[in-house]
Image 1 (cartoon, rainbow, N blue to C red):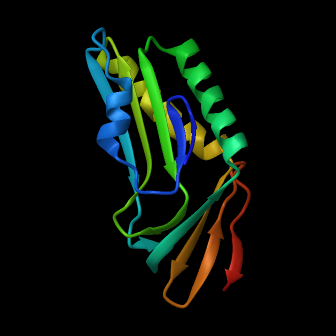
Image 2 (cartoon, rainbow, N blue to C red):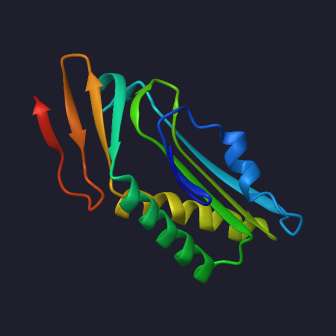
Length: 150
Protein backbone atom coordinates (compact mmCIF):
# COMPACT_ATOMS: atom_id res chain seq x y z
CA UNK A 1 0.00 0.00 0.00
CA UNK A 2 1.21 3.48 -0.83
CA UNK A 3 0.07 6.07 1.66
CA UNK A 4 0.26 9.86 1.84
CA UNK A 5 -1.38 10.81 5.12
CA UNK A 6 -5.09 10.36 4.70
CA UNK A 7 -4.89 9.19 1.09
CA UNK A 8 -3.89 5.72 -0.05
CA UNK A 9 -3.51 3.40 -2.98
CA UNK A 10 -4.27 -0.05 -1.60
CA UNK A 11 -3.44 -3.48 -2.95
CA UNK A 12 -5.58 -5.15 -0.28
CA UNK A 13 -9.33 -4.73 0.34
CA UNK A 14 -10.28 -1.31 1.68
CA UNK A 15 -11.56 -1.20 5.26
CA UNK A 16 -14.26 1.47 5.00
CA UNK A 17 -14.49 1.76 8.78
CA UNK A 18 -10.76 2.54 8.95
CA UNK A 19 -11.17 5.26 6.30
CA UNK A 20 -14.07 6.74 8.28
CA UNK A 21 -12.03 6.59 11.50
CA UNK A 22 -9.30 8.67 9.84
CA UNK A 23 -11.70 11.62 9.48
CA UNK A 24 -13.55 11.39 12.79
CA UNK A 25 -13.18 14.60 14.77
CA UNK A 26 -14.85 16.02 17.86
CA UNK A 27 -15.75 19.20 15.92
CA UNK A 28 -17.45 17.22 13.16
CA UNK A 29 -21.21 16.92 13.21
CA UNK A 30 -21.25 14.97 9.95
CA UNK A 31 -19.24 12.35 8.12
CA UNK A 32 -20.21 11.73 4.53
CA UNK A 33 -18.90 8.69 2.68
CA UNK A 34 -18.79 7.34 -0.83
CA UNK A 35 -18.19 3.64 -1.47
CA UNK A 36 -17.59 2.72 -5.09
CA UNK A 37 -18.10 -1.01 -5.58
CA UNK A 38 -17.60 -3.40 -8.48
CA UNK A 39 -20.91 -4.17 -10.20
CA UNK A 40 -21.69 -7.23 -12.29
CA UNK A 41 -22.61 -5.37 -15.49
CA UNK A 42 -21.40 -2.56 -17.71
CA UNK A 43 -22.21 -1.42 -21.24
CA UNK A 44 -24.77 -4.24 -21.49
CA UNK A 45 -22.19 -6.90 -20.68
CA UNK A 46 -21.83 -9.31 -17.75
CA UNK A 47 -18.71 -8.20 -15.85
CA UNK A 48 -16.58 -10.98 -14.33
CA UNK A 49 -14.10 -8.76 -12.44
CA UNK A 50 -12.10 -5.54 -12.74
CA UNK A 51 -8.42 -4.73 -12.71
CA UNK A 52 -7.13 -1.31 -11.64
CA UNK A 53 -3.68 0.10 -12.36
CA UNK A 54 -2.21 3.33 -11.02
CA UNK A 55 0.96 5.33 -10.81
CA UNK A 56 0.91 5.72 -6.99
CA UNK A 57 3.20 8.76 -6.56
CA UNK A 58 1.19 10.80 -9.05
CA UNK A 59 -2.16 9.40 -7.86
CA UNK A 60 -1.39 10.37 -4.26
CA UNK A 61 -0.25 13.83 -5.36
CA UNK A 62 -3.52 14.31 -7.26
CA UNK A 63 -5.50 13.12 -4.22
CA UNK A 64 -3.70 15.77 -2.17
CA UNK A 65 -4.69 18.39 -4.75
CA UNK A 66 -8.32 17.26 -4.41
CA UNK A 67 -8.02 17.71 -0.65
CA UNK A 68 -6.62 21.23 -1.12
CA UNK A 69 -9.47 22.18 -3.45
CA UNK A 70 -12.08 20.72 -1.10
CA UNK A 71 -10.60 22.70 1.80
CA UNK A 72 -10.77 25.92 -0.24
CA UNK A 73 -14.43 25.38 -1.18
CA UNK A 74 -15.99 23.88 1.96
CA UNK A 75 -15.57 23.98 5.72
CA UNK A 76 -14.37 20.49 6.55
CA UNK A 77 -12.40 18.83 9.32
CA UNK A 78 -10.79 15.98 7.32
CA UNK A 79 -10.97 14.10 4.05
CA UNK A 80 -9.62 10.60 3.38
CA UNK A 81 -9.46 8.85 0.01
CA UNK A 82 -8.57 5.18 -0.52
CA UNK A 83 -8.48 3.51 -3.95
CA UNK A 84 -7.79 -0.16 -4.69
CA UNK A 85 -5.50 -1.44 -7.40
CA UNK A 86 -5.13 -4.96 -8.73
CA UNK A 87 -7.88 -7.50 -9.36
CA UNK A 88 -11.26 -6.75 -7.75
CA UNK A 89 -14.20 -9.11 -7.62
CA UNK A 90 -17.88 -8.22 -7.88
CA UNK A 91 -19.04 -6.42 -4.73
CA UNK A 92 -15.58 -5.30 -3.58
CA UNK A 93 -14.93 -1.62 -2.86
CA UNK A 94 -12.76 0.07 -5.47
CA UNK A 95 -12.80 3.48 -3.77
CA UNK A 96 -13.86 4.85 -0.39
CA UNK A 97 -13.98 8.56 0.37
CA UNK A 98 -14.87 10.01 3.77
CA UNK A 99 -15.31 13.70 4.61
CA UNK A 100 -15.99 15.11 8.06
CA UNK A 101 -17.40 18.56 8.62
CA UNK A 102 -19.20 20.55 11.29
CA UNK A 103 -22.34 20.46 9.11
CA UNK A 104 -23.85 17.86 6.77
CA UNK A 105 -24.20 20.06 3.70
CA UNK A 106 -20.46 20.71 3.45
CA UNK A 107 -19.62 17.05 4.10
CA UNK A 108 -22.04 15.81 1.43
CA UNK A 109 -21.08 18.38 -1.20
CA UNK A 110 -17.35 17.93 -0.59
CA UNK A 111 -17.63 14.14 -0.83
CA UNK A 112 -19.59 14.40 -4.08
CA UNK A 113 -17.02 16.79 -5.52
CA UNK A 114 -14.11 14.57 -4.41
CA UNK A 115 -15.33 11.45 -6.24
CA UNK A 116 -16.11 13.42 -9.39
CA UNK A 117 -12.70 15.12 -9.37
CA UNK A 118 -10.94 11.80 -8.60
CA UNK A 119 -12.48 10.27 -11.74
CA UNK A 120 -11.35 13.29 -13.77
CA UNK A 121 -7.77 13.77 -12.61
CA UNK A 122 -6.26 10.86 -10.69
CA UNK A 123 -4.12 8.49 -12.81
CA UNK A 124 -5.95 5.26 -12.07
CA UNK A 125 -7.03 3.05 -14.96
CA UNK A 126 -9.78 0.43 -14.97
CA UNK A 127 -9.95 -2.70 -17.12
CA UNK A 128 -13.22 -4.62 -17.19
CA UNK A 129 -13.21 -8.34 -17.81
CA UNK A 130 -16.53 -9.57 -19.12
CA UNK A 131 -17.93 -12.67 -20.74
CA UNK A 132 -16.28 -12.74 -24.16
CA UNK A 133 -13.51 -10.18 -23.70
CA UNK A 134 -12.02 -7.27 -21.85
CA UNK A 135 -11.91 -3.49 -22.19
CA UNK A 136 -9.94 -0.58 -20.78
CA UNK A 137 -12.29 2.14 -19.58
CA UNK A 138 -11.41 5.84 -20.06
CA UNK A 139 -8.31 7.45 -18.67
CA UNK A 140 -8.41 10.23 -16.05
CA UNK A 141 -8.80 12.89 -18.72
CA UNK A 142 -11.92 11.14 -20.04
CA UNK A 143 -10.65 10.03 -23.43
CA UNK A 144 -12.68 7.51 -25.38
CA UNK A 145 -12.82 3.85 -24.44
CA UNK A 146 -9.97 1.73 -25.76
CA UNK A 147 -10.98 -1.78 -26.79
CA UNK A 148 -8.55 -4.62 -26.11
CA UNK A 149 -10.64 -7.54 -27.41
CA UNK A 150 -13.84 -6.35 -29.11
